[in-house]
Image (cartoon, rainbow over all chains, first blue to last red; front, side, top):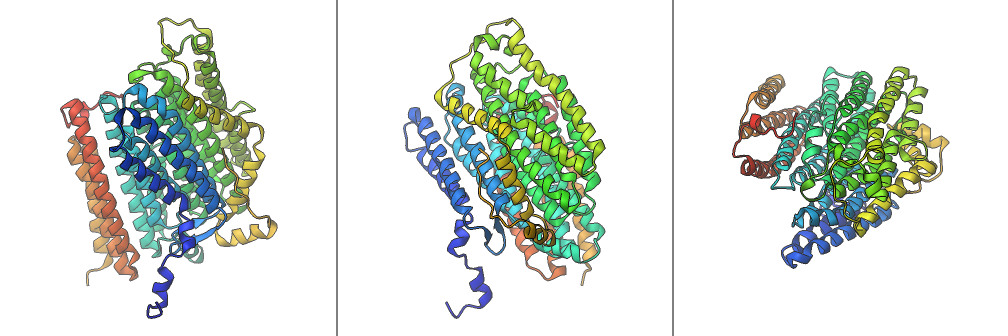
Length: 514
Length: 100
């Protein structure tokens, strides 16, 4: 190979490059295996088997992440970066997928959906999300974003015979592609302003010289695209419709995993580039998301729509963490955002798993009225949902409490008093509609009989994992938070990172958020 | 040589056409075509900037955008067929089961 020029030799991938995308490779292989097995196995038995293969894929993905975490660094011509930050989000999205697959076994049988692609698409979607969390190149971020989006567009429409499901799929697809085009235009302008598509190089270029107007426009357009993906106001209009029509376990999936991945991209882009002029953009988006989400949720009677508005509100709380500008506040902001993403995932996936089970054939029982008397007819299920709802409110001892606590305390430290005030008032409004569900479950007599089937093993395991994760983050948050704080320093721009490294020399130990 | 700004204005115009089409058209297929128009506007920007910076990165990006647009088209048309089967219409105003 000596006849090749040095530049070409450098571009040939080494084995370490492949280790740094090992989780993505493992998940893709398992996804393909599910697709290939689907036509080969007996249709009656196929669902269980394919689900188990997919679950095995997710577990193998977690192991691969653990293996990947031991060789941090750049791979594939500086496209992929494995650091504590990307390992954290790898663990998070793959764990979400595992729990969602577990909770889907029974759901698919009850709904009468026979399609192995369902599990394959979850795995493929996770590949995209995992890539997003480790990408340091705008090209790869775009590809990851699209892999995850296209998979979720299809998953949204999986109750194919229901008009509402295909409608929500169509809305998600059209508005999602619209937002992607804006993101892409932002990338094009960023490339035009700096001449680079690598985040680190863009950051260097922007710090070395005066910032052009084009950069501001580019950042704003990219924020539109990513703001849509995380369902932040004013790009949140699609959320209630899409969540109402989509299959319930998939809502649990798409309200947490793609959101976490999009927040990971946003964190990396915003803080590594140290995006100029972002303060008011994010301030307004955060304030609007919290207010519109919570006020919108007050009047909902469909529980899926209610939680859709709540997810807009939670995106708002998370965005508060992005408003930290000074480098010393940045670390607390980033780590608070990471912690929030993890604990929101734990409680929301669990809540939607309960809803999916309770909804029954054809998702008939999804209104608040159907939940009347659930506390008596299915005490365990009601208690489980109550824990998740209390966590969504932010009651101490649950993950939701520390998530909000870290975000708001970081905001107060950064002197964002007004934003914190809006957030706290909104939390109080939020408590009203979450508690309303609890009151309906425990204190109302059922007006019509709603059948409650016993909880199957898969769902039971999924709920157990979600509850344990929610309580773990609420009782022993330190380990995860410390890990988040250490990895937060790694995504800050170079000067700030060296400053941080001089004070902190301990090597980062990977910790699963679940 | 044609100056950079000409390309950028044209690309911005194409993008704006796409946005306008997306917002005012009522047929799902036309809306979908408007999105493609937006992507092509972006592609033109990428190529123009690639020539300006003498960097191939912009042109490579265009290939990725085209591939992704094709994948999106496949999924999008499948979703449109699914909607047509349940609804027998391609007018977005009549696809209104879920309140917006």
